[in-house]
Image 1 (cartoon, rainbow, N blue to C red):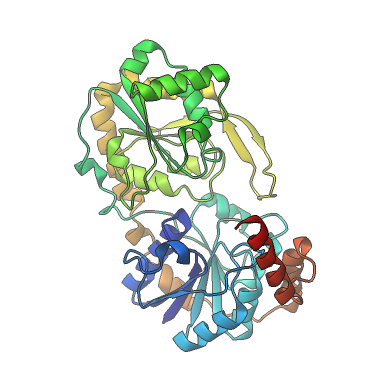
Image 2: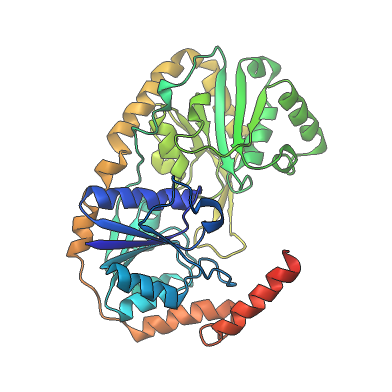
Length: 410
């Protein structure tokens, strides 16, 4: 079976998700081809990402996120004789409609969706939900598949590199999105620790943002403290891009007070690297919780996101987050035992190869459903809500977008 995965394809979380699907399908006997609609500036000719099975889309200038050029895509589908296409975070529905018209089975990895998008997902023959939270949103879909998330426990085995320390080292990864991942909440909690607890701990943050950007939500007083803690190495900021298995070996406990997550990629990775978790008591973060070693932080409030994402954001209690940090500091003599249990938890529950072993056979058994023109109209209407007549005037929109970029982004 020839499987096409339509995805961004470079050093980013979404691409790591697609890579895990690629590895799973190949392990199960499928032949996988990547249609890369993003990442060509970063990963083309990079041996970690580029290969003869990767096609880099040439026409990417378009105002809709994750645009797929219809002519390029159709040529690729026919040339590679694709039987099944899996779309990763696809908002532009034209390529999905094209696959259905060509009689190709289509599925989606479920991550981003709004309430208005839910009926549009009926166009897919199957959906893959990696969390119970996503599954609950699509419980009425004809073929919603629950495939619990996991990771490569052989790659994410950072406990083998970890050097012991007298201090408890809290590790946090926020990439380019510190606000969504709750970095400000963690900083406020850590800055409120007593001097005695500070002496027994460190905070390590892996990010692609500057110190000023990380601290922009802090008060003036907190910013001064933050800067002084960075100077005396109580807080360490690491800004370099690192390939898997990342920098988990630098920490002892993984702290991830995320306001919103579609999957929680780093939590399975951290568990595999023998790290207990401190996360909000909200899905999907709390789906990774083992109550004997991990800490679920109380939620103070929930609120909608500006872009209309289906699930509300949370904001966890800074007081409770601080208490969570203190728990590991005060019980650091048990940390080695908890770390062993975290690794055991990963080996039992988060081995991707095991969790996904049924997937290709399941997809093979799913029938291609007839194309429903009513659903097609819903998909087109969703895209045209923000960009009127964009399906008819694609060339004009592309030209306008190109001019806009040349003026404002040059």
